[in-house]
Length: 335
Length: 250
Image: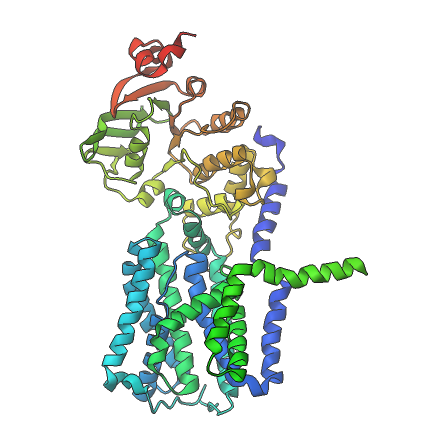
């Protein structure tokens, strides 16, 4: 097996193409974002719901970064979302009216919080991590409850009046400006995340999830990598929280509640992890189903959501997504 | 001769068990050195000490003159001390190409890049392809690692280490589990290693050891029994007794 039997140039070209192919923008992705753009023009009466979807999608994207790429299971991701919510509210109330400057400040605050807590979280293995993330979330929730002068406590934070977006657009009651704003922020952060996960750094984080032992054996510091991705994800979650406060002018203890973290995991289970779109698609399905069920049975919607999720987990995402494809193929085959 | 790797009175205790007992070993640059010993002799513990997976109880480790006893794992790899594993430690959902590209990116210090694609650097591609060609992995370089036959995975296990650009390579039973007929591929890959790369081979397959190594150290119960050339070790009565046993008479 001498090296001369190979055509080096051809192999390099083939390798380059293969590596490029993985990161290439697929047609389905373009369709996805065009559909998102179309929703701005054709779903005017759904802006409020869509705004929630975009924010939850961004929040889920942030969890996907640490779960789908870093392999860290977190049950307390709402901590960063909630801190983002309250931080944005406080900023708006006490001086920083500009929403976009607010986003940057919130990102910095939650990144710092993520960085600081990452060392706690990354110490243990899976089960410990779940408990620690859960504990951090509960702790912050209780802290917000005990500081009513700062957070409004159980009544929620009132009197948040965000300034004009870009100095021109006022957040209207139909949620048009809100949705467009959230969607653009989601898109920009998505593009950054996409670039990030296909960079050598992104590959090294996937490697950590694949095999920690080998990753450290090729000289990549495992903990260091996870600290970075955890910090970035915290900032993303914080921005999602800030968007919620800015677009709804309200923040309540609910944003730090445990069920937010749990819902988020469910959203990722529905949408799938490790390809970035799972969070957004999951958020869309989750919110639509939630909204639809809440309309016909406002009291028992949680029961139906639960039932659907049990069915989902039992049947499996691949089979549910695969079913229409299978039927389509059968129909075409028969024709 | 320059010394590539040297240990001074290395000791590692696990409670009452002495897994590594006063091991002083010297590898000259470019050496093809084998480490043999019966099961439980402490071979893997020694590798773990050398690569920094566990710290020694006492003793020192020097890599090309630098004391690395307390250096981080990443630093040791950066300085060129790289290992393979007895049980495959691969990235199952990567392709072989992605695996070696990641290792090569790390070697070239590009692994902290957040923005460019992994295949955008020509040096990474070139060294990745070079390694894949040498280990006959070109044809499967874009298949999923977990879907590769075991023999190919075994080759990749070594190829990933080579892509790290080792100065000293520690091979932990590279032929473990590989059927007789496929060992030639692994040998061929190893034979093409640059002459100035120092190799410490841990292996049970005596055939492979005798073909590959020029010097052999025998480890028994954590301590060095003897060190010598292939002939010396093969004909030493103590070795026959503790390690080769009855089979050595053939």
